[in-house]
Length: 274
Figure: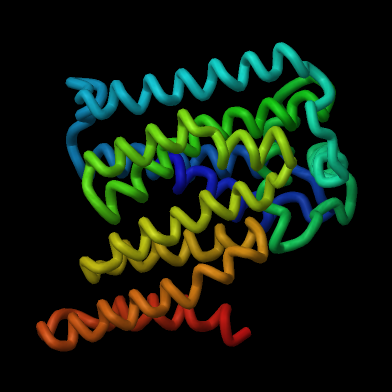
């Protein structure tokens, strides 16, 4: 739900159907909220159970503990550097300027297709908060860093096993060389969003092996979401195409349904050709 939520947020805010002069308005947020609530209720109706709220597992508690550690680390960092970051960069300055421009309805504020996603997310935070954009942008990235652990866990769980996913999550959270270095040391915000988008593509591709049309729709959303992250995401596409071709060959051998998998292959190849 976290991945679906930020993907829909970025796509809808980039589309901006209600405000053609640039910026973010209340109608955009109402549309985003309506879709989010619909998907949440739909997922509950489809599963007809909420396992975590009824009986959390040990793995759930471990992930929550790791998220608490990441949150505490970020809080300590902000306590030492409440306004200006420890390592200021030109990238950070541009992120703050673009985010502020989008939030305050400045025409033509959108930065670019392959970088604008992170600015739209942060601008939505500025829309609801009163405060300096420099501080709120850094805090928004801190929240995204903590939530990124869920993406790491889910992608590793899809590719390997739950035990491996917990080990990978612990290394990711406790090491800090990815989330802390990218965000707080260098300020590579779009690059960090590209990591999340890439993991979403992998998760959606693995789920598409079932051959359902719903998985095709989710993969399409993940694909569009990735376009708003960073241009480095295209380096992942050859590997995804290779895996897709392999799964298609297996489906042909087993005489399984192949049309959804062909559609996903077309979706992956089209951006490379274009």
